[in-house]
Amino acid sequence: MAKPKLALYWAASCGGCEIAVLDLHEKILDVASAFDIVFWPVALDFKYDDVRAMDDKSIDLCLFNGAIRNSENEEIAHLLRAKAKTLVAFGSCALEGGIPGLANMTTRDDIWKWVYKDSPSTVSTNGGTYPQTHSTMAEGAIDIPEMWNTVKALDQVIDVEYYIPGCPPQPDQIWSVIEFILSGKPLPPKGTVLGAGEKTCCDECPRERTERKLKKFYRPFEIETDPKTCLLDQGIVCMGPATRDGCGALCTKANVPCRGCYGPPPNVVDQGAKMVSALSSVIDAQDPGEIESILDQIADPLGTFYRFSLAHSILRRVEKL
Amino acid sequence: MAFEPKIIGFLCNWCSYTGADLAGVSRIKSAPNVRVIRTMCSGRVDPAFILKAFQLGADGVIVMGCHLGDCHYQEGNYKTIRRIPFLKRLIQGFGIDPRRLRLEWVSASEGDRFAHVVNEMTEEIRTLGPLTLHVHREMQQPVAQH
Image (cartoon, rainbow over all chains, first blue to last red):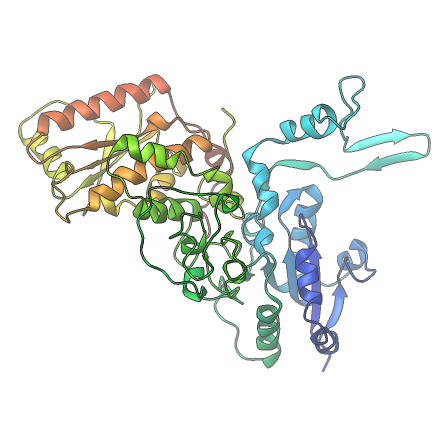
């Protein structure tokens, strides 16, 4: 029997998901021997035309990481969707926009204006030179992809079978998913989140929770935290209560608050809304004025609560006022 | 056609919903712009419900509950009194005017107050105009659950 075909692709991402796959270490050899890798731009020299030449539904498994940021990302997402039987949104960016999704707090024009004109390190002539999708010069013409104003998650563009969360997904979780797929057992229903738990990050966190009420919030650099007690109890905004488990509480074990990369837990649509609920429950104030002054201490709620999930949140992007 | 604000009202079962009922049976006139959703407590109103209302085209959202100290569940409305100001900050971050979200205490005997609050909010939203969001333009299907 021919080996199942595997494709890996990166759209708008940092490459961390690719490193996470390589972090399987020697097991990567098992992956290479079990699958016929037909497309993996970061590691192997295949071209888009090779994929275009494949038969529809001829790729058995496609792990797609990265958000949809430009016309190239979107085009390849559609292409791989046509060629793959099972397509997995791999990592936070593909799942919910991830860090690139934070661009939805501003606009393409404002980003370009800063990057190509206003930033102190830019020498701007003729009012700034902006990238063009099409340019012609003596040697010929070039076309480059068009950047979208709004970053999208993968399932906002194409149909996706499964999701593997994380920034990046933890290698042991990736391996367990690959092992499961190779075992030939019947696949779970479409839409299942693989390689993660069904609870919140707090359930995995070894820190002790004391259900304290808070009058003061701190930013991590402002206090020395106790390594055994819940960070939220100590006044640090920790995304644990609004984040799916599966990472093994890596961050809180390293004395860093959870950043929310595993996305919302089951049955939660919007991490920011869940965080508003969670923090409202621990604020120790009943007077409107006092409540406002405590809320003032929480820096950048939008960017903190939606650090990874803005593009996939209920409102998706900031409206330019 | 003149703009008619669409306002979603989350009313607690024990006080505000009964208050709205009283306004009705007392035949107090009030603006018809608030679509009422009855919840068991104002503390039951998940912030996601409110964001969802804006996503699906509400121009404003009003949450009504028992006066502080009167909550049927002792402290449900104390959660609400912290949540709504917090959520106002969040929606302001999203570029939605925080006046589009309002929290009011209306007891079961305050039919007149219900009418007054509804009229006031309707007029305020009328002045602010319709809410247009990126999601309204771009999104045809609701956010996928996962």
